[in-house]
Image (cartoon, rainbow, N blue to C red; front, side, top):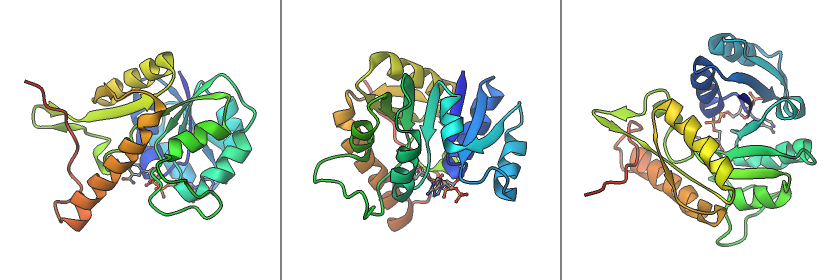
Length: 209
Ligand SMILES: NC(=O)c1ccc[n+]([C@@H]2O[C@H](COP(=O)([O-])OP(=O)(O)OC[C@H]3O[C@@H](n4cnc5c(N)ncnc54)[C@H](OP(=O)(O)O)[C@@H]3O)[C@@H](O)[C@H]2O)c1
């Protein structure tokens, strides 16, 4: 699959390396493909990965992964507006307010993105645990859950497959309306990891009996 990753940072760079090793073609979409930081990520990703400008990366890809700070999303959306037929995986968390794009009470970042990008099938995913855990999502014998939501069943099936390739158990939490819960779950993760001092090697798991 051709996967365009917008933002080659902690989340984007880690996902890119994992999926490249699984045989996907990774194109990082960045502000400047020639910076040493980007070139290092491309070299570490290997397997034919490349970096280009944001619109170009999105155009080339079946799946676009949004992994920039929330404050940068307006700028990214503007660049990929008008593209159609692609899945967009929204990994962002609106932790810091975006003055250019204030969220109404009860509305998630993912829903706002979907509203502004009607050509994309938006799935919220990979936002509920720290990036440092993505490269190994096993905790003893347990696999962390990747909670995801979106309004397109086929798109969620694709994202669930990508989650399984990382090692997650995929949990569908419903339509994109549920994204607000996943963004709150990320806040809970941050609170536990950093304010409660548990540390970042934690993840959520749905238990059954
Ligand atoms: N870190 C985590 O543990 C974690 C976990 C789950 C979800 N998230 C969410 O995932 C997103 C990415 O987090 P991260 O930790 O990967 O961030 P990061 O390491 O700071 O990387 C952010 C990336 O976004 C790019 N970027 C910044 N401003 C941009 C702009 N205006 N236009 C285009 N690209 C821009 C940066 O490019 P430059 O190199 O050019 O600055 C960088 O490649 C955030 O929304 C975060 O809340 C983070």
